[in-house]
Structures are given as structure tokens and as C-alpha cells.
Picture (spheres, helix red, strand yellow):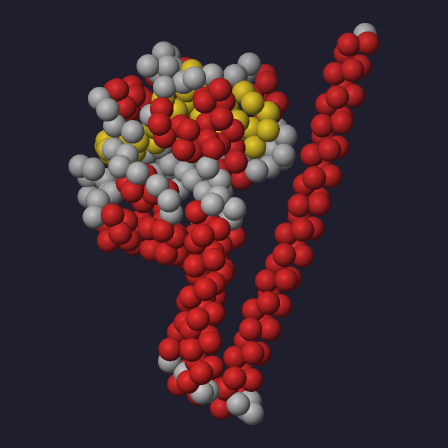
Length: 116
Length: 227
């Protein structure tokens, strides 16, 4: 991995961290949801400051170059994040449906009481 | 001081009766409200049968959401003190008076702590507590003996913080933020009992999740939040 690429990754990791913190400061992001992003930015910082680590792993796994391996890690991270988001959206949909149903049943019951 | 005891209850049908009766007997001067957190067992029936003062949160929000409902009610009805009190019978209502007194003396948060005068045992469960206490000490310089205690009293200024901010769950990491806001936090010695019925959340996966959340939050998020 070249020095330039290393600098790009360091910049990317610091910017991720700063963005996440700024968003939390502005009450736009939940700490629970931010944890993964913070951990990711730290991991990125570690592998860009110590390129020996990804170089060693990529050699073991048979990647053509270290940067290939890092891009692969990026894709894998996004893959996981996308999947967890899909799962979260399912849960939200279910919850919203549940909420509407329970509210409408309550309304139905109170209307019935009024009618009697 | 007008005090509201908030009791979040999720599937606590077996414990809630005893918990509320404890408050009615040992702290008769304070108001209480049970917040049903979308329980799947017959918690709500038990509450209604006994005519306990309650809010029926009919969808599950988790502990934070349920407690926050209580905080919002307290804000609306202009209470001076809110006490967070577990629905599982771990906490004992006889300490409520002492906690309210400490708020009256000018403290903002009073923690019902197991380890003020008693020593913290070296058990597996307490390793997490030690780790969190150490992290808080490192970041704020303040010593919290029992950061994971869920038995806390909050004064008026804090009620607003906890009711309105999305990032102030009633968890140990929020204490760091409260110290940064120069809130006065005091601990008093209490006894807690083991829960009688039902399971607690603590298994290995949840513990690791919880601890990593606490560590990342205490070291990397709370120090940067706007006070």
C-alpha cells in the first residue's frame, strides 16, 4: 500500500469520526446507532497507520494487492450495514403496523362504549 | 418536594404487585406511576386489577423508552424529583426518603449505590461494573462506586435532560455527560435483593454488546458532546 493511499484512508477514517460526532452533537444521530461507525473508523485508522497488518492478512488470503484487500473489507462492512438496516426496517414496519392496529382497536372500543 | 417514582414494567406480572405495595407502604408520601412497556404477559391485567396508577405503553419501547415516558409525564406535571425504580423487586422503597432528602440538599442526581460503605466483590458480574467505573474516572476524574445501579433520583434540571434528549438513556455513560454539565452526583448506600421471578437480560452476547457500547460511548462520544 502506497503512502498516498495510506493518507487517503487516514483522512477517510478521521472524517468519518468527525461526521459522526457532529451529527450526535446536533441531536441527529442515536449513540446506539453510531457505535458501529465509530468502531469502523477506528479499524480504518489502525489499518492505515499500520499497513503491515492488512498486508500480512491479504498475503495469507491470497489477494493480488493490499489495497484490493482493503476495498474488500470496505464492501464487506457496507454489506453488513445494509443487511442490519434491512432488518431494522422490517422491525420498524412491523412496529408501525402493530401501533396502528392497537390504536384503532382502542378507538373502536371507546367508540363502542360511547354508543352504549 | 413533589416526587414521582417511575416503575418501568416489561413482563413483570409476578413481581409488580410486590414492588408497588412496597412503595405504598414504605414511601406513602410520594406519587408513583407504573409504565407498562408493551408486556406480553398479563402485567397490565395485574396492574388494572390492583388499581395501580399506570400508563399503558401498548408497544414495547425498551427500558429507555419506558423510563422516558415517566420523565415526560413528570415534566408535564411539574414534579421536582423523579426516581427510577425497577419493576422486578430489586430495589427497596425504604431508601426513597433519603434519596429525596439528598436532592433537597442540592444534589442533581442521587444514585442508590450498593458499594458506598460496602466493598465491591470480585465476581464476574462486577468486572463490568469496575471497568465502567474506571472509564468514568479516567474521563471525568470522578469516582462512581456503583455506575450500573438502576436506582436513581433526578432533580428538576436533570428531568428535562433525560426527558428531551435522544442520547441520554438512564445508563452509566450518561453520567459522564452529566459530570461535564457540572451536575452534582451523590451516592448513598442501599441494599438490593436478587430478582425473584423472571430472567434478567444479562447473557454473554448482550454483555459484550453492552460493554462495547459503554466503552465507545464513554471514551469517544461523551467527551465530545455539546454541554
